[in-house]
Image 1 (cartoon, rainbow over the protein chains, first blue to last red):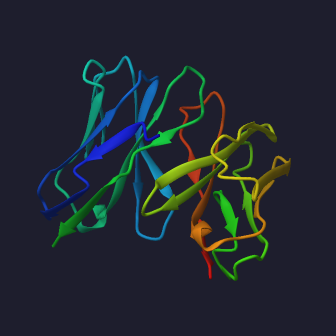
Image 2 (image 1 turned 90 degrees about the vertical axis):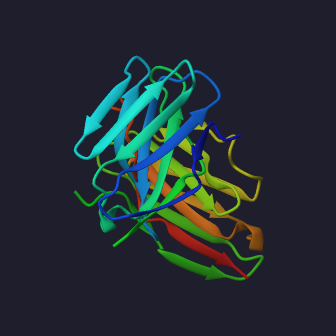
Length: 112
Length: 114
């Protein structure tokens, strides 16, 4: 069964705007990761946030984690056309566990 | 670094034929994962290996699917016999223990079974 569920399933915004995607999960986790997938390509790791962290930044990316609500959000600021892709959250459940469970993804389209 | 290498990139075969997908993980990575991605089911983990040993194959759909990792630099996923419902993109990924659990994905093999 899917651990992570992204919301919305699709998002279309204008270049320069901020994009926010959400992920909810069902069981306790050790880490939560976000990946990007460009059309026809493999997934690329963006950022990892640990269960004892609440917020993390990487360039134009900001990730938050609320373990009490079992949810995470990914914010992309000042979006660019190159950000057009699908974004997935992935969770692992145990310390040292390498197995990830991916959500269904959010398809983000940046309009020029 | 060449990244994870998969071959072939595209495979078209007829129902009932055997299909073999290949993967070369990143050198030094001790975990290797096989995923399947479809519109209906999303990204599913089929099986993963640690130090060439299968750890969890609970995602393998049925006995028609098998995976091997004869050495640290090569893995195969075999489907025999193939069926139209096996049509999907198959990804191989690798990661290193003791790291940040980040997985590195290959470009995928798009399989079409007619």
